[in-house]
Length: 207
Image (cartoon, rainbow, N blue to C red):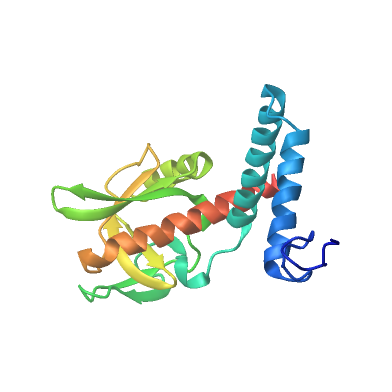
């Protein structure tokens, strides 16, 4: 008795040609055939691992190259208090309401900052800015010749902290108290760190 196409005794085993079940069956057969023809020898396993690592690295690079949302970044700049009698940029600190006149040109910008950390000192929590080596050398000379004047930190064009320069800063580390609630500081540090990383990545890309 001849088998009837599409019946349980035929090749289709009662499954329509275009059905998902038939496609799954054919796909499974193709996969089994692929691996039966290509056994998992040590060399084959090594090649697959290398290809897998390459693909993961490529995906990671694409992800890291994606620009961050501007709201996740923070621009930090330091301004030097102007000399007596010199008219400059007027700023007001948010909590102490201290009025300061600073030189309009920043002495340190985003590209000078290598890292930012939230640290605990005797008087409370403050931010520690680590400068890049070249910026640290320049700031050492500037801090040595401007003792007694204040250094003002501005984040996204808002003055949020100031410290008096009491001596030459040799290690490129600037500790400064922030006139913001302590609860807001971790998120601020995260934004500053992300900005620093993006700038360093861009500088490395340009060489």
